[in-house]
Amino acid sequence: MEYLLILLAYLIGAIPMSLIVGKSTKGVDIRDYGSGNPGTTNAIRVLGRKLGLFVFLLDVLKGGFVIFLIRIGLFEAAEVFHPLLYGIAAAVGHIFPVFLKFKGGKAVATSVGAFLFYSPAVGVIGLLMYFVGLKLTRYVSVGSLTGAASVVILSYLIFFFGPEAGTNAVYLFGVGDDLFLPVLASIGVSLIFYRHRKNIVNIKNGTEPKSSFMQKK
Image (tube, rainbow, N blue to C red):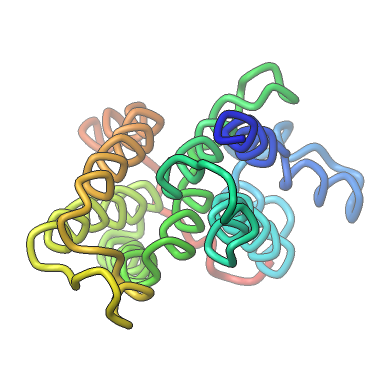
C-alpha cells in the first residue's frame, strides 16, 4: 500500500492543472506564452489573476491530497510511509510529469500544499515569506526561494523545539524529534532551488524580469 500511495501521489502531482484550465477556459496552451513554464506563475501571467489563482489552489491540493487521506485515517489499517514523503512525491510529479514528457513546473505551489496539510504552521509561514520576498524584490523567484528556505529553517526548529506527540499543537506544527520533517523538507526545498537555478543566474546577471503578476489582467 505504501508504494501504491507513492505512485498515486506522483500521478496526482503530474496532472498539468495549468494546461487543463488554460485549454478548457481560454483554449490556450500556456506553454506557448510567457515563460513557457506550465506552473502557477505563468498561469497568472497568461490566464489572468482569477484563473491563475485557481490553478494555484489546484496545485496546492495536489501536494496535500494523499497527506489529507492519511490524516483523516483512511489508511489507518495499512502501513504507510511518513506522510510528508507523499507530498514530496507529488512535487516530483509536478516537476517531472509523465503526462508532459517529464517537463513540468517548479513545484512551489505543490510543495506549499504538502506542508499545509502536514504542518499547517510551516506551510502558512512559508507562504507568507514568499510574499515578503516578492514584495521586497518584485522577483517571483526570490519570493519562492525565500519561502522555501524559511520552510527548512522552521522544520529544524520544530525538530528541536516542537511539541510532543499527543498534544493538540501537533496538528499545527507536527511532532518534535521527527527527523523526517527537516530531512524531507530539505529534499523538497533542494528540488525547488534546483528548478530555480536559471533564475538565480539571471538575478546575478541582472536579467531576471521583475514581476507584476499580482495585478489583474
